[in-house]
Image 1 (cartoon, rainbow, N blue to C red):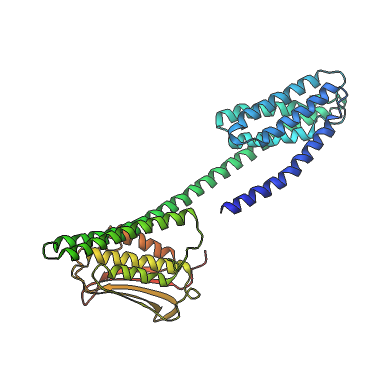
Image 2: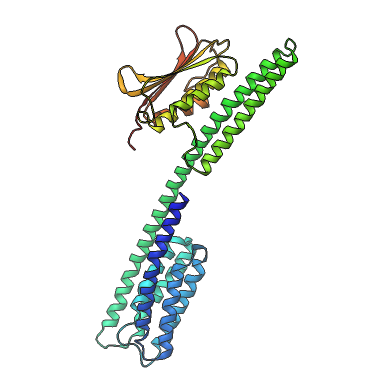
Length: 389
Protein backbone atom coordinates (compact mmCIF):
# COMPACT_ATOMS: atom_id res chain seq x y z
CA UNK A 1 0.00 0.00 0.00
CA UNK A 2 2.80 2.41 0.93
CA UNK A 3 4.67 1.57 -2.27
CA UNK A 4 1.61 2.25 -4.42
CA UNK A 5 1.06 5.56 -2.62
CA UNK A 6 4.65 6.58 -3.26
CA UNK A 7 4.31 5.58 -6.92
CA UNK A 8 1.19 7.75 -7.28
CA UNK A 9 2.96 10.68 -5.64
CA UNK A 10 5.93 10.34 -7.99
CA UNK A 11 3.58 10.21 -10.99
CA UNK A 12 1.72 13.29 -9.74
CA UNK A 13 4.97 15.21 -9.32
CA UNK A 14 6.16 14.08 -12.75
CA UNK A 15 2.97 15.43 -14.35
CA UNK A 16 2.88 18.60 -12.25
CA UNK A 17 6.37 19.82 -13.15
CA UNK A 18 5.74 20.22 -16.92
CA UNK A 19 2.36 21.87 -16.26
CA UNK A 20 3.91 24.43 -13.90
CA UNK A 21 6.68 25.11 -16.40
CA UNK A 22 4.12 25.73 -19.16
CA UNK A 23 2.12 28.12 -16.97
CA UNK A 24 5.28 30.06 -16.05
CA UNK A 25 6.16 30.35 -19.73
CA UNK A 26 2.70 31.75 -20.54
CA UNK A 27 2.94 34.20 -17.65
CA UNK A 28 6.33 35.39 -18.89
CA UNK A 29 5.04 35.88 -22.45
CA UNK A 30 1.99 37.84 -21.26
CA UNK A 31 4.16 39.98 -18.99
CA UNK A 32 5.96 41.28 -22.08
CA UNK A 33 2.80 42.94 -23.41
CA UNK A 34 2.45 46.06 -21.17
CA UNK A 35 4.66 48.96 -22.28
CA UNK A 36 5.75 49.95 -18.75
CA UNK A 37 8.45 47.85 -17.13
CA UNK A 38 6.89 48.19 -13.68
CA UNK A 39 3.60 46.79 -14.96
CA UNK A 40 5.44 43.92 -16.67
CA UNK A 41 7.05 42.98 -13.39
CA UNK A 42 3.64 43.33 -11.70
CA UNK A 43 2.00 41.01 -14.24
CA UNK A 44 4.65 38.37 -13.66
CA UNK A 45 4.63 38.77 -9.87
CA UNK A 46 0.83 38.56 -9.67
CA UNK A 47 0.68 35.46 -11.88
CA UNK A 48 3.44 33.68 -9.94
CA UNK A 49 1.79 34.55 -6.62
CA UNK A 50 -1.56 33.13 -7.70
CA UNK A 51 0.14 30.00 -9.04
CA UNK A 52 2.02 29.56 -5.77
CA UNK A 53 -1.24 29.91 -3.83
CA UNK A 54 -2.74 27.08 -5.85
CA UNK A 55 0.22 24.80 -5.06
CA UNK A 56 0.56 25.37 -1.31
CA UNK A 57 -0.81 22.77 1.13
CA UNK A 58 -4.23 23.21 2.62
CA UNK A 59 -3.15 24.52 6.02
CA UNK A 60 -1.37 27.47 4.32
CA UNK A 61 -3.89 28.06 1.58
CA UNK A 62 -6.01 30.78 3.20
CA UNK A 63 -3.09 33.14 3.78
CA UNK A 64 -1.53 32.39 0.40
CA UNK A 65 -4.84 32.98 -1.41
CA UNK A 66 -5.36 36.27 0.42
CA UNK A 67 -1.87 37.46 -0.54
CA UNK A 68 -2.42 36.41 -4.16
CA UNK A 69 -5.71 38.33 -4.42
CA UNK A 70 -4.14 41.44 -2.87
CA UNK A 71 -1.17 41.36 -5.25
CA UNK A 72 -3.36 40.78 -8.30
CA UNK A 73 -5.76 43.55 -7.29
CA UNK A 74 -2.90 45.98 -6.66
CA UNK A 75 -1.45 45.28 -10.11
CA UNK A 76 -4.89 45.93 -11.65
CA UNK A 77 -5.24 49.26 -9.85
CA UNK A 78 -1.74 50.39 -10.84
CA UNK A 79 -2.05 49.26 -14.47
CA UNK A 80 -5.55 50.72 -14.83
CA UNK A 81 -4.37 54.13 -13.69
CA UNK A 82 -1.67 54.45 -16.33
CA UNK A 83 -2.05 56.23 -19.65
CA UNK A 84 -0.17 53.56 -21.63
CA UNK A 85 -1.82 50.25 -20.86
CA UNK A 86 -1.62 46.83 -22.47
CA UNK A 87 -3.35 46.55 -25.82
CA UNK A 88 -3.63 42.77 -26.35
CA UNK A 89 -4.04 40.98 -23.03
CA UNK A 90 -4.82 41.83 -19.45
CA UNK A 91 -3.35 38.48 -18.26
CA UNK A 92 -5.53 35.61 -19.47
CA UNK A 93 -3.31 33.01 -17.77
CA UNK A 94 -3.54 34.88 -14.49
CA UNK A 95 -7.31 35.08 -14.96
CA UNK A 96 -7.58 31.30 -15.36
CA UNK A 97 -5.41 30.82 -12.27
CA UNK A 98 -7.67 33.17 -10.30
CA UNK A 99 -10.75 31.21 -11.39
CA UNK A 100 -9.09 27.99 -10.20
CA UNK A 101 -8.20 29.79 -6.98
CA UNK A 102 -11.85 30.74 -6.49
CA UNK A 103 -12.93 27.12 -6.96
CA UNK A 104 -10.44 25.97 -4.34
CA UNK A 105 -11.54 28.72 -1.95
CA UNK A 106 -15.16 27.58 -2.08
CA UNK A 107 -14.13 23.94 -1.94
CA UNK A 108 -11.74 23.95 1.02
CA UNK A 109 -12.22 26.96 3.30
CA UNK A 110 -14.80 27.38 6.04
CA UNK A 111 -18.04 29.05 4.87
CA UNK A 112 -17.39 32.42 6.51
CA UNK A 113 -13.84 32.82 5.28
CA UNK A 114 -14.73 31.33 1.89
CA UNK A 115 -17.52 33.89 1.39
CA UNK A 116 -15.28 36.88 2.17
CA UNK A 117 -12.32 35.64 0.15
CA UNK A 118 -14.49 34.57 -2.78
CA UNK A 119 -15.99 38.06 -2.92
CA UNK A 120 -12.44 39.46 -3.14
CA UNK A 121 -11.55 36.97 -5.88
CA UNK A 122 -14.67 37.90 -7.85
CA UNK A 123 -13.92 41.62 -7.59
CA UNK A 124 -10.33 41.05 -8.70
CA UNK A 125 -11.41 38.95 -11.68
CA UNK A 126 -14.15 41.33 -12.83
CA UNK A 127 -11.85 44.38 -12.68
CA UNK A 128 -8.96 42.75 -14.57
CA UNK A 129 -10.07 44.07 -18.02
CA UNK A 130 -9.35 47.58 -16.71
CA UNK A 131 -5.70 46.80 -17.36
CA UNK A 132 -6.40 47.05 -21.11
CA UNK A 133 -6.23 50.12 -23.27
CA UNK A 134 -9.77 51.32 -24.00
CA UNK A 135 -10.76 50.15 -27.48
CA UNK A 136 -13.69 52.54 -27.70
CA UNK A 137 -16.15 50.04 -29.18
CA UNK A 138 -17.70 48.64 -25.98
CA UNK A 139 -15.82 45.33 -26.03
CA UNK A 140 -14.27 45.90 -22.61
CA UNK A 141 -17.72 46.44 -21.11
CA UNK A 142 -18.91 43.20 -22.72
CA UNK A 143 -15.86 41.42 -21.29
CA UNK A 144 -16.63 42.80 -17.84
CA UNK A 145 -20.22 41.53 -18.10
CA UNK A 146 -19.03 38.08 -19.22
CA UNK A 147 -16.74 37.82 -16.21
CA UNK A 148 -19.57 38.85 -13.89
CA UNK A 149 -21.73 36.07 -15.31
CA UNK A 150 -18.84 33.60 -15.06
CA UNK A 151 -18.30 33.98 -11.32
CA UNK A 152 -21.51 32.15 -10.22
CA UNK A 153 -20.36 29.16 -12.28
CA UNK A 154 -17.08 29.18 -10.37
CA UNK A 155 -18.98 29.18 -7.08
CA UNK A 156 -21.25 26.33 -8.23
CA UNK A 157 -18.25 24.25 -9.31
CA UNK A 158 -16.56 24.83 -5.96
CA UNK A 159 -19.73 23.81 -4.10
CA UNK A 160 -20.04 20.64 -6.19
CA UNK A 161 -16.46 19.68 -5.40
CA UNK A 162 -17.06 20.51 -1.73
CA UNK A 163 -20.06 18.18 -1.71
CA UNK A 164 -18.02 15.49 -3.46
CA UNK A 165 -15.30 15.77 -0.80
CA UNK A 166 -17.91 15.49 1.96
CA UNK A 167 -19.39 12.36 0.38
CA UNK A 168 -15.94 10.83 -0.01
CA UNK A 169 -15.10 11.61 3.63
CA UNK A 170 -18.37 10.03 4.75
CA UNK A 171 -17.70 6.97 2.64
CA UNK A 172 -14.15 6.71 4.00
CA UNK A 173 -15.47 6.97 7.55
CA UNK A 174 -17.96 4.19 6.81
CA UNK A 175 -15.14 1.98 5.53
CA UNK A 176 -13.05 2.75 8.61
CA UNK A 177 -16.01 1.97 10.85
CA UNK A 178 -16.48 -1.37 9.09
CA UNK A 179 -12.78 -2.10 9.60
CA UNK A 180 -13.06 -1.22 13.30
CA UNK A 181 -15.98 -3.64 13.65
CA UNK A 182 -13.99 -6.30 11.82
CA UNK A 183 -10.99 -5.80 14.10
CA UNK A 184 -13.26 -5.88 17.15
CA UNK A 185 -14.66 -9.22 16.03
CA UNK A 186 -11.16 -10.60 15.51
CA UNK A 187 -10.13 -9.36 18.96
CA UNK A 188 -13.19 -11.04 20.43
CA UNK A 189 -12.29 -14.28 18.68
CA UNK A 190 -8.69 -14.22 19.89
CA UNK A 191 -9.45 -13.17 23.45
CA UNK A 192 -12.46 -15.44 23.92
CA UNK A 193 -10.70 -18.46 22.42
CA UNK A 194 -7.47 -18.25 24.41
CA UNK A 195 -8.77 -16.77 27.65
CA UNK A 196 -11.48 -19.43 27.84
CA UNK A 197 -8.78 -22.09 27.55
CA UNK A 198 -6.80 -20.43 30.34
CA UNK A 199 -9.87 -20.23 32.59
CA UNK A 200 -10.80 -23.89 31.97
CA UNK A 201 -7.31 -25.12 32.77
CA UNK A 202 -7.10 -22.91 35.86
CA UNK A 203 -10.37 -24.35 37.18
CA UNK A 204 -9.13 -27.86 36.58
CA UNK A 205 -5.95 -27.07 38.46
CA UNK A 206 -7.89 -25.63 41.43
CA UNK A 207 -10.33 -28.52 41.73
CA UNK A 208 -7.63 -31.18 41.56
CA UNK A 209 -4.86 -29.38 43.48
CA UNK A 210 -5.37 -31.37 46.69
CA UNK A 211 -5.45 -34.77 45.03
CA UNK A 212 -2.66 -34.24 42.51
CA UNK A 213 1.05 -34.66 42.99
CA UNK A 214 3.38 -31.65 42.71
CA UNK A 215 4.52 -32.94 39.32
CA UNK A 216 0.93 -33.02 38.02
CA UNK A 217 0.21 -29.54 39.37
CA UNK A 218 3.40 -28.27 37.75
CA UNK A 219 2.30 -29.80 34.46
CA UNK A 220 -1.10 -28.06 34.72
CA UNK A 221 0.57 -24.74 35.46
CA UNK A 222 2.84 -25.27 32.48
CA UNK A 223 -0.24 -25.82 30.29
CA UNK A 224 -1.76 -22.57 31.61
CA UNK A 225 1.49 -20.75 30.87
CA UNK A 226 1.54 -22.21 27.37
CA UNK A 227 -2.05 -21.10 26.77
CA UNK A 228 -1.14 -17.57 27.87
CA UNK A 229 1.88 -17.58 25.57
CA UNK A 230 -0.33 -18.70 22.69
CA UNK A 231 -2.73 -15.85 23.42
CA UNK A 232 0.12 -13.33 23.34
CA UNK A 233 1.46 -14.89 20.16
CA UNK A 234 -1.93 -14.66 18.47
CA UNK A 235 -2.27 -11.01 19.47
CA UNK A 236 1.22 -10.24 18.13
CA UNK A 237 0.40 -12.04 14.88
CA UNK A 238 -2.79 -10.03 14.50
CA UNK A 239 -1.00 -6.73 15.14
CA UNK A 240 1.71 -7.72 12.65
CA UNK A 241 -0.97 -8.52 10.08
CA UNK A 242 -2.57 -5.11 10.59
CA UNK A 243 0.80 -3.41 10.12
CA UNK A 244 1.81 -5.42 7.08
CA UNK A 245 -0.54 -7.46 4.91
CA UNK A 246 2.31 -9.59 3.50
CA UNK A 247 1.59 -13.31 3.28
CA UNK A 248 2.55 -15.04 6.53
CA UNK A 249 4.78 -18.07 6.58
CA UNK A 250 3.03 -21.40 6.82
CA UNK A 251 -0.68 -22.13 6.56
CA UNK A 252 -2.77 -19.24 7.76
CA UNK A 253 -6.50 -18.64 8.27
CA UNK A 254 -6.78 -18.46 4.48
CA UNK A 255 -6.30 -22.25 4.22
CA UNK A 256 -8.34 -25.09 5.67
CA UNK A 257 -5.17 -26.80 6.92
CA UNK A 258 -4.98 -24.09 9.61
CA UNK A 259 -7.95 -25.77 11.33
CA UNK A 260 -5.64 -28.51 12.60
CA UNK A 261 -3.99 -26.04 14.97
CA UNK A 262 -7.37 -25.12 16.48
CA UNK A 263 -8.43 -28.73 17.14
CA UNK A 264 -5.01 -29.68 18.54
CA UNK A 265 -5.09 -26.73 20.91
CA UNK A 266 -8.62 -27.60 21.98
CA UNK A 267 -7.67 -31.25 22.59
CA UNK A 268 -4.81 -30.12 24.81
CA UNK A 269 -7.42 -28.73 27.21
CA UNK A 270 -8.67 -32.23 28.07
CA UNK A 271 -11.60 -32.86 25.70
CA UNK A 272 -10.52 -34.60 22.49
CA UNK A 273 -11.47 -32.93 19.22
CA UNK A 274 -11.31 -34.61 15.83
CA UNK A 275 -11.01 -32.91 12.46
CA UNK A 276 -12.23 -34.24 9.13
CA UNK A 277 -11.51 -32.32 5.93
CA UNK A 278 -12.99 -33.74 2.77
CA UNK A 279 -10.76 -34.77 -0.12
CA UNK A 280 -10.02 -32.24 -2.81
CA UNK A 281 -10.48 -29.14 -0.68
CA UNK A 282 -7.17 -27.41 -1.27
CA UNK A 283 -6.44 -23.72 -1.86
CA UNK A 284 -7.38 -24.06 -5.54
CA UNK A 285 -10.86 -25.33 -4.74
CA UNK A 286 -11.60 -23.19 -1.66
CA UNK A 287 -11.09 -19.45 -1.86
CA UNK A 288 -9.07 -17.70 0.84
CA UNK A 289 -12.16 -15.76 1.94
CA UNK A 290 -14.22 -18.93 2.42
CA UNK A 291 -11.37 -20.69 4.23
CA UNK A 292 -10.94 -17.66 6.51
CA UNK A 293 -14.65 -17.64 7.40
CA UNK A 294 -14.55 -21.40 8.01
CA UNK A 295 -11.59 -20.87 10.35
CA UNK A 296 -13.56 -18.29 12.34
CA UNK A 297 -16.64 -20.54 12.50
CA UNK A 298 -14.60 -23.41 13.94
CA UNK A 299 -12.76 -21.16 16.38
CA UNK A 300 -15.98 -19.61 17.72
CA UNK A 301 -17.69 -23.00 17.95
CA UNK A 302 -14.78 -24.55 19.85
CA UNK A 303 -14.66 -21.56 22.19
CA UNK A 304 -18.36 -21.94 22.97
CA UNK A 305 -17.95 -25.72 23.42
CA UNK A 306 -15.22 -25.14 25.99
CA UNK A 307 -17.36 -22.55 27.83
CA UNK A 308 -20.82 -24.11 27.66
CA UNK A 309 -20.60 -27.84 26.75
CA UNK A 310 -20.65 -29.20 30.30
CA UNK A 311 -19.55 -32.83 30.54
CA UNK A 312 -18.57 -33.07 26.86
CA UNK A 313 -16.44 -36.12 26.03
CA UNK A 314 -15.83 -35.40 22.37
CA UNK A 315 -16.03 -32.55 19.87
CA UNK A 316 -16.12 -33.19 16.14
CA UNK A 317 -15.19 -30.78 13.37
CA UNK A 318 -16.19 -31.75 9.83
CA UNK A 319 -15.46 -29.71 6.70
CA UNK A 320 -16.67 -31.13 3.40
CA UNK A 321 -18.61 -30.37 0.26
CA UNK A 322 -22.37 -30.15 0.53
CA UNK A 323 -24.17 -33.38 -0.34
CA UNK A 324 -26.59 -31.67 -2.73
CA UNK A 325 -24.15 -29.21 -4.34
CA UNK A 326 -20.47 -29.50 -5.20
CA UNK A 327 -20.11 -25.71 -5.17
CA UNK A 328 -20.86 -25.31 -1.47
CA UNK A 329 -18.79 -26.02 1.62
CA UNK A 330 -20.34 -27.28 4.86
CA UNK A 331 -18.56 -26.59 8.15
CA UNK A 332 -20.06 -28.44 11.11
CA UNK A 333 -18.90 -28.48 14.73
CA UNK A 334 -20.71 -30.82 17.15
CA UNK A 335 -20.26 -31.85 20.78
CA UNK A 336 -21.98 -34.29 23.12
CA UNK A 337 -22.15 -32.11 26.22
CA UNK A 338 -25.02 -30.49 28.07
CA UNK A 339 -25.61 -27.13 26.38
CA UNK A 340 -28.40 -25.57 28.39
CA UNK A 341 -26.69 -22.15 28.59
CA UNK A 342 -25.20 -22.05 25.10
CA UNK A 343 -25.95 -18.86 23.20
CA UNK A 344 -27.74 -18.76 19.88
CA UNK A 345 -26.96 -16.56 16.92
CA UNK A 346 -29.68 -14.10 17.78
CA UNK A 347 -29.93 -14.26 21.54
CA UNK A 348 -27.32 -11.73 22.40
CA UNK A 349 -24.13 -13.78 22.08
CA UNK A 350 -21.77 -11.29 20.45
CA UNK A 351 -19.52 -14.06 19.08
CA UNK A 352 -22.22 -15.90 17.16
CA UNK A 353 -23.97 -12.65 16.29
CA UNK A 354 -20.86 -11.27 14.63
CA UNK A 355 -20.12 -14.67 13.11
CA UNK A 356 -23.58 -14.81 11.54
CA UNK A 357 -22.96 -11.43 9.92
CA UNK A 358 -19.54 -12.52 8.71
CA UNK A 359 -20.93 -15.74 7.17
CA UNK A 360 -23.76 -13.80 5.52
CA UNK A 361 -21.23 -11.34 4.14
CA UNK A 362 -19.43 -14.24 2.46
CA UNK A 363 -22.70 -15.38 0.86
CA UNK A 364 -23.45 -18.24 3.26
CA UNK A 365 -25.72 -19.13 6.17
CA UNK A 366 -25.07 -20.08 9.79
CA UNK A 367 -27.32 -22.15 12.05
CA UNK A 368 -26.78 -23.35 15.60
CA UNK A 369 -28.85 -25.27 18.11
CA UNK A 370 -29.18 -28.43 20.20
CA UNK A 371 -28.83 -31.86 18.60
CA UNK A 372 -31.52 -34.52 18.84
CA UNK A 373 -29.10 -36.97 20.47
CA UNK A 374 -27.79 -34.38 22.91
CA UNK A 375 -25.11 -31.78 22.64
CA UNK A 376 -24.81 -28.75 20.41
CA UNK A 377 -24.21 -28.17 16.74
CA UNK A 378 -22.94 -25.19 14.75
CA UNK A 379 -23.35 -25.52 11.00
CA UNK A 380 -22.23 -23.07 8.30
CA UNK A 381 -22.82 -23.36 4.57
CA UNK A 382 -20.42 -21.33 2.45
CA UNK A 383 -19.73 -20.99 -1.28
CA UNK A 384 -16.46 -22.67 -2.23
CA UNK A 385 -15.43 -19.65 -4.27
CA UNK A 386 -15.93 -16.14 -2.90
CA UNK A 387 -18.83 -14.37 -4.54
CA UNK A 388 -18.22 -11.52 -6.98
CA UNK A 389 -18.28 -8.06 -5.39
